[in-house]
Length: 372
Image (cartoon, rainbow, N blue to C red):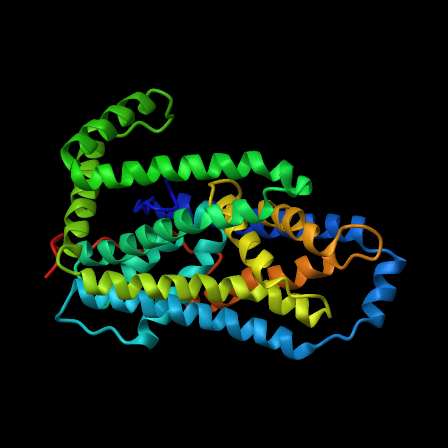
């Protein structure tokens, strides 16, 4: 699954440059189009009157932005803990790990399931002096911790919203997401325990799919690539043996950094003069996370907005005078567009490219897969 297992694939620069520009356009177009539609159907005279009468508290909007920045820092702290545990000879600073996290946000925001950011983090960790295996292990460790966290808290979200008929239309996508998530987590663990069988299975699938591919590639080249990637994955994960303390510490940070992100919509609600719905909002964020992690549109644009409308419409209403449209705009700006802008800035600082950027810019290193 793209969310858990990073797809470390390197394409021909010319082709990738075209495909990177396209997701940017698609993600922004869908996101803006859906927001316009929501505003069209939710904004009326009553809404404007309520917005004018509301006691807007701008300090909570500022706090929402600061929480998003704290979210980046905590993500960087987790990456620092895992990276330094993987390689005792390196000591990546919190600032460097946070820069790596911010730089990965741009591609994460324009690819389904945030999969595009993972190769960026692996490459930048490798650039800091970590072996490819250790870099891969650190990023895979993040995905594993995220998976454990999501599976642990999903029942909370389901329990809180189980009696809400207004969100039933999201239930199918939610349960599909949970089932797919569990299946790929099982495959993820199986790949760690049985790398040889995993290679055989992937090679078998590759041969079957090659019949439908217009681009014919040497079978030996495909097999060598599969063997190399599975070896890097398996060897990287073995780096975690004996690092229980680091995993526990990273696990605690995982809870803190997701919980920090989950507090942002409550701050936006307070800024609009509405009730924060702390518990219900936390549950809504859990369910929303499951929905948007599925590989659908670039950056889950459109899918996220519809999910927010369905979940938060239950809390603040969707009828005449509702501020749901305004809430979606402000919330998505802080958690999506702000990430996109900051990620583009840091990506340009590092790779000297944004719109024409390609994963081919992330060059492979002749690095040993084993951790030091």
